[in-house]
Length: 425
Image (tube, rainbow, N blue to C red; front, side, top):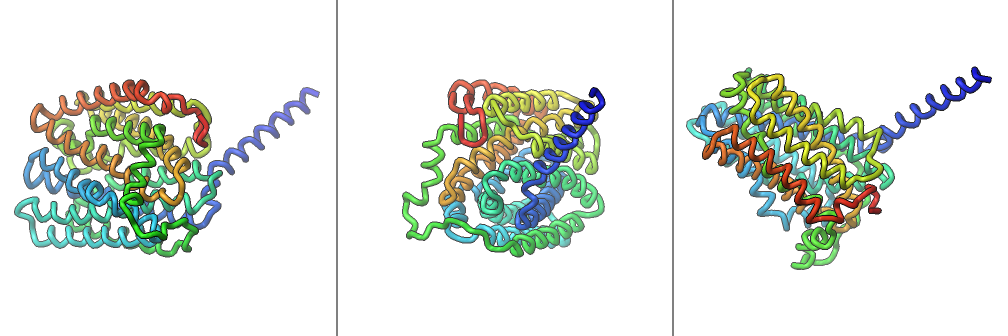
């Protein structure tokens, strides 16, 4: 009898394992999503190669951390200036087509950087001009790609798709910076050439996706339709709290722009080490993303998100004061892991709780928040580093992110009370 019971338990364990494995890959049962996932990986990988190459190239030219901040703000400005256009375009036209065209424009920008490097650079201005065009491409790419996912998988598989979509982004953030550092070690031209080819491949993959069903706007655009994304976010306090939490937490704690300073002047690691530092957050985030694909957050999602934003800020502060490479890399790994949890919850909330007809505009606004937290966060970090020093700028930013998490728990009680990711609190 005891033997029979053991067999029953073993059978139950096997069935549970099979069920968990099947649940983990549900999004890939849909062929269009697989193509999208590969395209997203290639596009993000290429962007990381360009980011590492540009950052090192600019710092080699000027040795001024303020210029590293400008790299971020120049790429962010188009997302802010075109927010009313990019969202409407994603909702009125094929998101697949917009995503493919934007990836192709990014490839053109990479080729332009290649040519500038080939002929020699006397200053950063030409690179900044190309980065402005690169920012325009990203401004259209981001809301179209974020909105397209919901058109490729059914609602019951969407949380799984968010986890795997994040894994594509994080995997690219692991291998992309390392590849960028290695390629830049060969030459800047090699880095930009590889990035251009892979961006073109991403554009081709997106274009090969069969046209999905999309509830598009057909009426003539008005001020009301242009501002529909802002209006929806303002009316839905849970979504407002989620996107603004990311904005202020990462705006204060972002230290990515200063990694060239840490790699060269504090940790003495060189170009390859810069790639490793850039990859470290992605290593932690990828591990968490794969875990979440098979073990989704089923309860207390709001509290979990706020707690992990606070952890994100704490690890940022510890990284700021570290002068030991192993500790710095470990902090960046944990920083990425904690950030992945909040990203997973936030993106699932936004996409599932937004009607498809305004999803592009809501994502355009969301991408402005994300861009502000990343690119403007880099500008803040570069500016503060120039004023008070690199280490204090990073440490104070991390402490600020912890404070934001606590403050948002009070300001947005609806966000704190969210328990499930299916719209029920």
